[in-house]
Image 1 (cartoon, helix red, strand yellow):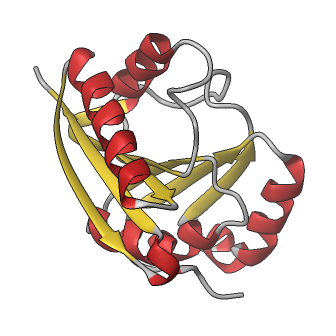
Image 2 (tube, rainbow, N blue to C red):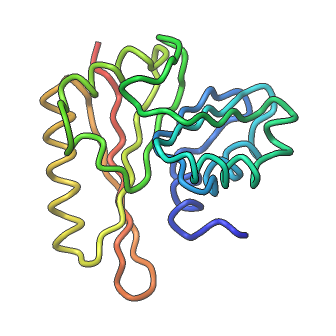
Length: 173
């Protein structure tokens, strides 16, 4: 099973370094886990997903990375996952409605607490049209800005007009 265009673009956009400590929220079948772990040497990716079936598939796909100590995959929701504060250099989510369901302020505060100094949050989305993509980018940028993050945005278009977007957030000290 190969990684999709959106996962490859996400990992390229994050410019994963060999020593990064990465958290993926909502890992699905583990395609991005494979790509990130393949770039790590001393770093590690922790991936969480609420769905046991996705965690099972992601684990099967990434056994070599797990055995090598570069990846850990857990069945957990973001709100309840046992994660170390101030640890992650990069936190990302691809097509996860993390901030749009539940208490966004609480979730953003949790992300802020998990980020290492100078750590970054990457919120990736895939939308069917440029208008949907622009609306999503704007909403995410406003939300993060309101909660003390400096943001940048990027996007790319793939076949059938699908637009891939990213809002990168860095906590303002």
